[in-house]
Structures are given as structure tokens and as C-alpha cells.
Length: 234
Image (tube, rainbow, N blue to C red; front, side):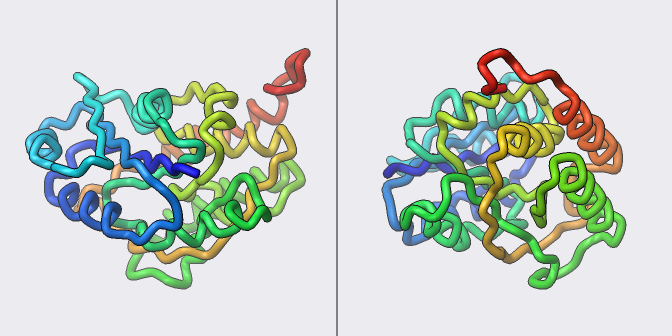
């Protein structure tokens, strides 16, 4: 199996070099590629990516910032692996946890795996950010009669073909809710494994806001009430 690690990047010149180094240093149990999408960065991110030298690394550049969902779409369109996982470049997530996500797939226990931030293994975070995440996750569980622990997690591992079939339209952070809503709508319940998490604050460049939480609730409601396609696949 080949795993495509998809990394959307926007204005991360202070972290991108470490993000690449950490992602490529992991002892993965399978072949990997790292597909980085520079989503219209206006700082030195592009120059740093241009100097990166590793045969497992591919860089795609957006001329203008289009949002996380759009960056992931470009990465998925160019992915060559059978499976994919999203890894942000902000160093909040530890790529050393990715083999944990792969384990249930490799031993046949799961097809879709989420990394669950229990918010017990962390450094610091905003109270309202955590409460917002819990509210959105609870809404998904109520709407779809499911019991997942962390809807907004970056670590979503699944077959590339499955992600493509979801036809995710959200161009920003709403893609997290859309992906989960569409999976739950198909009665695909993610297998969850605990992961570590090091949150950064607004002053460190954190981009998600309360507006993204409101959008996530709207998207979940839309996916729950949307009429099922004739094929039953959407």
C-alpha cells in the first residue's frame, strides 16, 4: 500500500521546514509520498518549499489563496497513493501518530480512521475552541445517530478513491464537516485512535474562527437533510 500524505500550506514560513522534516522522518510501515499544496502563500513559504529536496516530496502551487478544502482537492487530484491522510503544516499534529492510524487499516479492522484529540494530551488551547469543536461533533452525532469523538480532527485517513467519490465542494475549513457528514450519511463510521495535539494560539497564526464553526453546523444540517441520489452513493 502507498500512503499519500496531503499537506495544505498557507503562510507558514516559520514552520514549514520543520513540518517537512518531521513528516519525512517517520518510520512508516508502507511506502509514502508527501504532496504539499502551497495555497497562495505571500511570505517565504514558496522559497523554502523550492529548496526542499526529497524524492518523496511533490509541491503544487496555487497562484491565489483558495482555502483548505481547495488545497486538499488539488492534493487529492494529484495523489498517487491508494490511501490518504491530511497533515497540516502548523505543527499542531505529530506525524509520528500516523502509523497508529495506519495500523487498523493494515490489519483489516477499518477502512476510514480518524485521529481523536482527546484534549487530554496537549500543551495549550482555547476553552471556546474546544467547546466549539465539541458542539460541532455533538451535532453530527445527534443528526446522524453516530458516536464519533472529534469531527474537526485534521487526521482523517481513508482510501483516495473514497475521498474523490465524496465530491467535497467546501473550499475552506468547512470541508472537515462536509467530509464527515458525507461519510456518516453513507453509514461509514470512522474508526478512531487517540493522538497527541499541540494547539497554537491566534498570535501564532491559528486561522480557524467561530464563523467556521457556524458554517460546519450548517453543512452538517444540509448533508443530513439532502435528498439521497438515485444511485444511493451521494
